[in-house]
Amino acid sequence: MKEDKFAGFDDHLKDLRPEVKEKALELAACYHLDGLEAGIALKKAIAEAELWFLDSEG
Image (tube, rainbow, N blue to C red):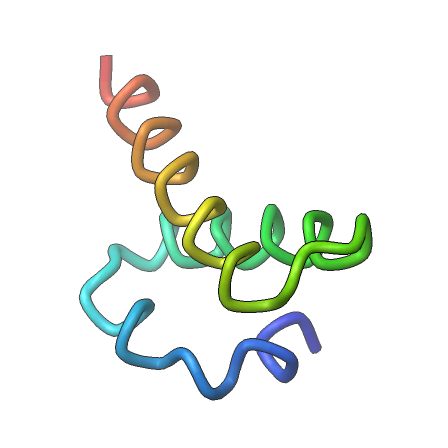
């Protein structure tokens, strides 16, 4: 499961909308596979997922 490697970062994820959280975890998993440390990957992914959500809201 995608969330397993980011389980220690619940504080970063708890206030996100479900769709933003899901997108952030997907992005973070990719960044982590590309070599970023999990915490940095997650922070970057959350920022991008929030922008993605705002853009999709129209």
